[in-house]
Length: 387
Image (cartoon, rainbow, N blue to C red; front, top):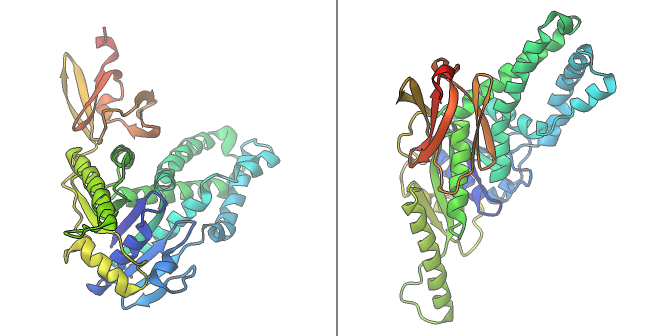
């Protein structure tokens, strides 16, 4: 089973490309499900048919579904919220405060991601293509499983103390099950052989820095990006003359300059799709989009080269160590480092992740950091050796 996520800024055409990819995968014999988690659903418009909360057939071996996060909150979240309220009340939190604490931000997105996992793991679909929300929302969504599971691990350890564990019973078990579920979500997202992300963009100014920041944020989460798609490229006017041809030629030259800038910045896994004269609706039109996008190749092959391991340790000399964190960083990246127990907290351009340090480095102190074309290099040393 493969899980392929499409994301990008709102309005760049990611829904169309996700639907086109699903269509061509089905035409090549794979049972394919296209899922929309974007609150502003437009997947039904792309296929030109009504879609509901359950998979609906839209072609041979092809189905689609528009998830309803609020509906999932009203059903799946209710039982767990009651159990969490009991746990918090049993831990000494006032009943009113406990009720407020169980209304967690991001629950609807988290349940949508859980539903994607459920559909992917039924064993029926060869490929699940996900039309995610805009980039910023998707980054928050993909960060949730690790963030909340980390909180629950700390909370569960605290609840196991005799002073708080009495009377919690099933609630503690529920918290543990929730933590295990979130861990499984994180494992699915970071399994590079199963899950990949395609970033959709339009070739406009400022897109290079924004795309690099998104790539850094996903790498920080351990999520693999296997391709970039520049959508809505103006058609080349050729030998046409006149005002319209002049405008097209100028606009296309601007877009080509942006694409060249991206490739010069190392963003070479880049495909492009020209702007359509009419909105592509229905599987026939989507097949044409896919033909241009993949040029007859396998849509699952991806374009990214082999990626380095996120963490690599080397000898730093004089009893110290160098920890390389493989991240695509720009020259203007804002980086912050901090130690949190046995973790290294890395914040890049506002995106933060706690990375568990290898056992060898847990007793070390951070003595410096720098970055190069291959990522961030952190210098560490044993406390007694720092001068």
